[in-house]
Length: 313
Image 1 (cartoon, helix red, strand yellow):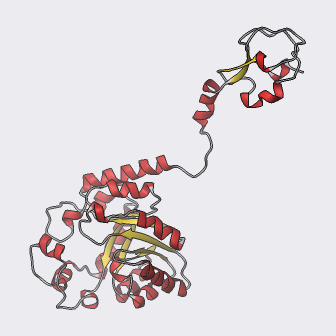
Image 2 (cartoon, rainbow, N blue to C red; image 1 turned 30 degrees about the vertical axis):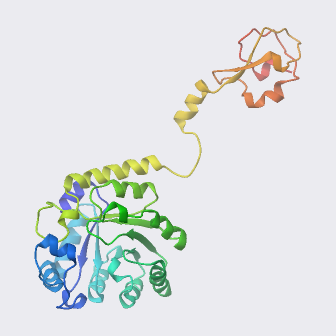
Image 3 (cartoon, rainbow, N blue to C red; image 1 turned 135 degrees about the vertical axis):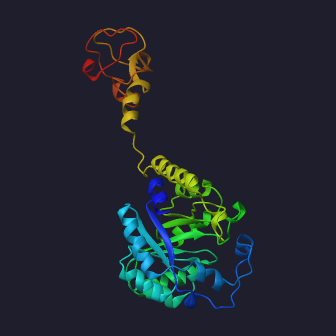
């Protein structure tokens, strides 16, 4: 999967680091979508234990990611896992939506003083505010909030992308989008709306066993997503309203100059009747017409000639 991600030119790959015994009771049941996708009534504990990787595995995965030029990230679901990830010097900590109210974990991760990427699925503004307060109490002011709808897959009528802008306005922090919809359209829209991070599940095969494959992108879709995001970033540009170099060149052809509307003689005082506006813009701009009116012509000027400052007194 790291190989495929590298070919698709993603910026980072993110795993999940956890100790099953520390994050779920043995009696906790799967979510309904998990039961449907796994076709199993096994407990959450059984499901997660089967998918749990050893700490040593993440050391290898991080090394391999870096060899491929991709940032390695992982969601820390418990304090022991967070300590391990900090020990191997991850660049940032992802905190999942399920941990927004987990004060002990959030404050512990905040103490590492690294960037925190906090998903906000299932959360109210009050809960997000509380989580941010806990982070700031530890002296950490580097948080990105991800808007998220914790439904797999998320139907379009539950996306509510405008809530991402609400998070940005309310908390004055960078925002992004953790996308659980099918396809790539919503992620691309989120980028157009100002998302600085897009998180998206991907898989090698949507038919593989497991709860999340069907709501994930395959390699082809992942490649399209990265391509469309890069195009969107290019299109969105910056917030400066200035003409481009190409526009400056074109403006000479399509903007107008003051031209003579009729023949007039040297020494004539120029009035509005002497003037017209026509392409190209190689003379005096029409916006300066009031400065031209009342001046004296220094030479004979024929109809349709572009008037220049050196022609006037």
